[in-house]
Length: 61
Image (cartoon, rainbow, N blue to C red; front, side, top):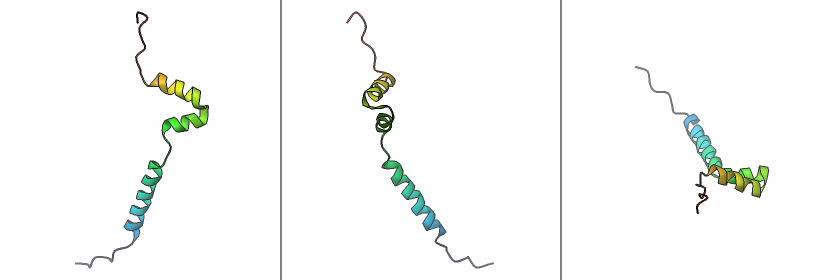
C-alpha cells in the first residue's frame, strides 16, 4: 500500500477564491440600482413598478 501524498495548499487556495467570489457577489448593487444607472431613476421606477405585478385599480373604484 502506498503512502498518502502530503497535503497541498491547492484546496485551501480554491476555498479562499470561492469565498472571495461570494463576497464580491454580495457587494454587488441590486438589480434596481443597476437599472437606475443604465436608464435613469424615473424610467427604472416605472419599469420596476410595471414588473412588480401590482394590481391595477378597477375603473369602478
